[in-house]
Image (cartoon, rainbow, N blue to C red; front, side):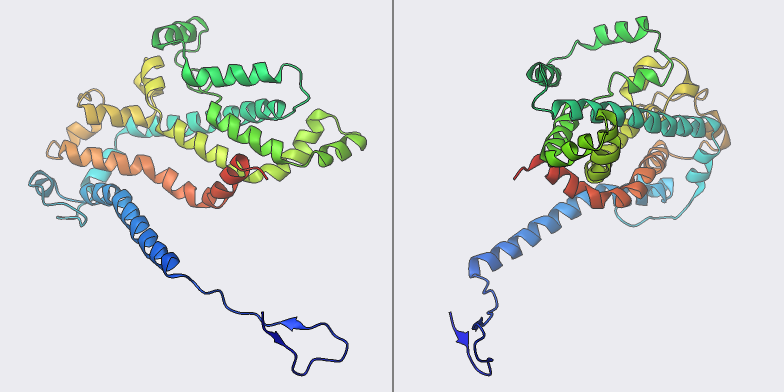
Length: 310
């Protein structure tokens, strides 16, 4: 290593001369290949969304002719106006927001409490509790027993039929448990010396330090509940209780009759079913797309902190 001794004060230690890091040829090739692969992944991922948006803004004749790709043809907003004029759509949309917010809050509270308990290595029976949780990842009671259980508990036609059976995702539980285990135990010991009990330590010490992982779990649960349709389809008997995903499912499956979307069919029978599907998909996914950028900055940090130790 070359040492620059020019104009150095007498008695001072020599200062090493900094050299720029030389990139190897292999590393440059890796960066180029990695950039190309990631660009292709982005293009493949965005293409369906752009196509759906273009179809939702296109005239029905161009869609049937297969002329709509990435750019709208025959630009029109008539289908948006027709869909938004359907009272059932807005009722189901309001249900989706309510179900998602309620179920996410319940899931976050239960997952946080369970993960915090499992993170205590001195807890007696900790291995049994972890085993019970992991067991449910691979074995379930089955569709019919779950339906009988929900029905016998009187949870049908309520938000509890959606929130409670799916309140704890074991993968999220294990990630949050690993994050809690990575926190310094000295902080909790100091808080206990200051007189805080277990709940006080969790609320005033642990959770403020866990914003990244909590935000990540909120994103996971919110997206899962927002996109969920089967539980509502199974446990909701009345249309006015369905989430908008069931509304979309009926459009895609062709099971929606005049009595379900009467405002649409009576207003204009010329609109193609494909256009209705595209518009409904856009309106359904738009809220999640708007919320995601505000949570994304916590996403990578939360997952890495909960999955990597050391």
